[in-house]
View 1 (cartoon, rainbow, N blue to C red):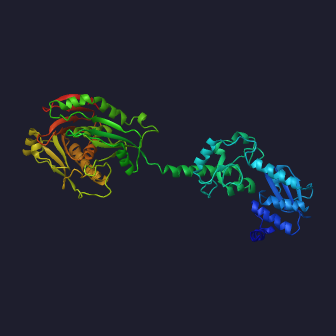
View 2 (view 1 turned 120 degrees about the horizontal axis):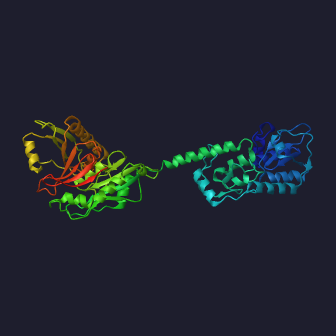
Length: 534
């Protein structure tokens, strides 16, 4: 009772809202007239319901939401002969703001109120339009993100049922009513009754506001704009949860007769640790499971012959042709390299830098492909040195990456070792102050190496203009692959990449990588097998 008195006090005549009254506010307005002995008139047409106080002078018409609280008060007024009714054309009632003396007043019986309430419930329910299908409901729910779509509300409706019935919290509200006689209804009402874009998810309060209390203040165009803005914002926020997609590619070989096995979950978790979303299928490229017999003559010629189809598949799969850059293409390629040094340089050259490439490095101690959260090894200081005294006019240069261990000059092929001793060949060395197999254990360290490797390539190609670069890799796989990426298609010196089967033998030539081709090289320096990289 106390709440009712408070509501009445707030609803003095001068304080009646121009937009309309809720069911509770309408009940208080009616109760105030009842307590003061004033006769009330209600007018209705289609979805519009208005009330005013009968008087000799024109009275203000008030829009109201006829509901469970106001109906009993109307019935009380009817029983005391304090209630009248008017039937008007909808367009007249919508435009009317004050009463007119020529309106024909009829006695309002209790059954009239009951029938009016039933008709309005049916109209604001499904009406005469098609019922909202489960598929449409799901689409509206998705577009709304489970929140009220009225601008600025955003009430979480996720724990409430979806319904068009009364006495609920979450509603599927039509912008253009499913019934031509409903709010904003028109000749397209039936056709639009099950169209998701014509339906908004709303809380109870805003559903009543747009359909019963302030229909005029909420034209279809405004509601459509609200829906579009809300759906766009939800889409933007949900998209922010999505990681960029990444295609995982392995380059694996069984090294030193030890099988190299990888776990799909470990590869995927490594990508996720970098906030990248792995595609379901992992591509295993140039997989080598055969016995490691690199000491036999002609090994690299046989290797290219055996894996030619694999090399061509890698070229095709990672190319930047239009067919590879469709809307379904991944945002990045994720490379997991653990292979022979010449293959890593070749794969890097094939994949290049035209696409976003994430390189992963295997940590043998931690047995993971993820960067460690904390560096467990001393900080590595990479450096570059140029040994160019008596350089032979830039015809040939040695480029070595010595991050895992220092390269012994005696491990070089005899003719190169002699040229170094006689200072007849330039030698660019990228070294590590504290050589370690796990020296590349962060993105920053890989970038440090990358910066020095680019500096070396620029010196060798642009300043010295060397025609042949002898490449020796004693470094983690990620660094070797990264160097291969820097070799521009059709525009780099011939890179002769060397291999060392074991520590008891010197390096031997393996592959020549030119701007357009890869060729296997025999121990005598002769070409055996050739594959075009175009």
